[in-house]
Image (tube, rainbow, N blue to C red; front, side, top):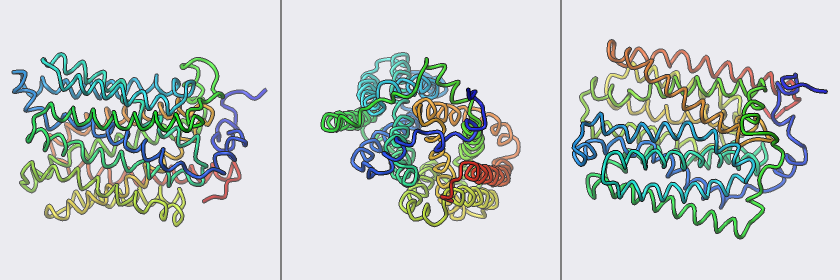
Length: 423
């Protein structure tokens, strides 16, 4: 009997998936309308991650606390968003990924309404925590659903289209919070998010009513939630992808977190202009999304991985050497393009780590990305405090290309082992 951790498990992915499932997925066209709805839900979920940051001063004034005390509303959301995905993943495998995403949208909408009606910082913090609990299901389970319903050959380009909502959401979150908060007050921000979540959830339920086949749960995963998670971790290829995404997330976001501070300190930019740095990164991501299908055909997943890593190294080096803000902004746009070249490749492989339990696998993927970020920022912070941001930009400029080269080599070895000639 084949034991977990055997050589076949070590290269598990497409080779270990039931062929009937793969051929069925590959023979169907990508469900464009459903992916568009999932992308809208991902927009709200990604925007929610940064929406509170520009509201902290208003919240401190509203509840008569310090800005540091008000930041608990952001911290609790991120904590819940990172931890509870471990529950949503196996739950989606058992009960259907898209229905769970639809329910999560409605739950997040209700939590946003409660946030808008909060009368104390304690109430707001609790509702933000619950928003993180509900909303954390949306992005990983949406990616897992794409993995279930789109053949591997089309999956990277399809995930890139889905990624457009997440990319725009990350870019728009801080801008939406700042602009709407200034014009209409902080409560209006949560009302707007509630409406977006509600519309996405209602549209998903309507779609499921007309296409019940999209609600099918995964019947292949066996055992408890814990055993499903452990089953993912037993696979060598799954461990490889998870480790790489944790290192990528920790290095990239640990450095990018301090880009705005660096622009302000080195070039004296006002904070209003500094906020455009996030938008510039989002613009780069959107450029990648626009041309993703062409890039996938031209470079293949190994090429995207390798050139994405090289591009990240060049962009961080340019950021460290930038003589003025114009060069720095150009480097940030390049960071957006090349980060998603590498990260989209990791996402695509994440959907194939455990085909019979994609929800659980993507939950582990999302958790490790979150943990990487949580570790990377505090490692970088004392370096920035003492020496400024350029030293950590140089570290990223060296490490990320090396990481991409290593993962591209791992992809080549895996392709040879499973007889895959796609790349």
